[in-house]
Image (cartoon, rainbow, N blue to C red; front, side):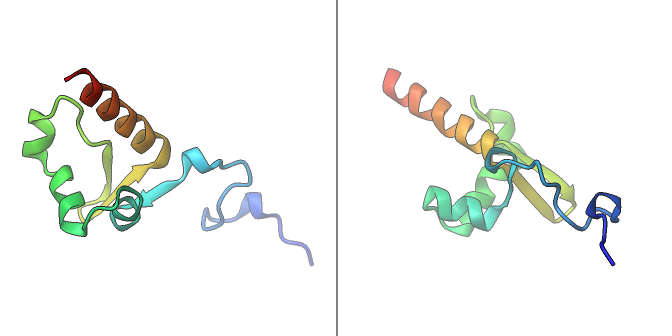
Length: 87
């Protein structure tokens, strides 16, 4: 019997997802940026987001499940690097 994965309940990832579309946990973001878990969580606080010129690109799936799309993270780091070079 062959299973058609396009007709599943969504538990299987789609075939056409790219590395840029990958959704990362905050722990994975910390590994990429070489930051501690608490440093990454501090970037997600709403007070800091409102004050930041370049807000951290986080979204919430559930009240306790914050995630970051890899392409948004790369764009955010590039903006910081450009802004840092202009200072």
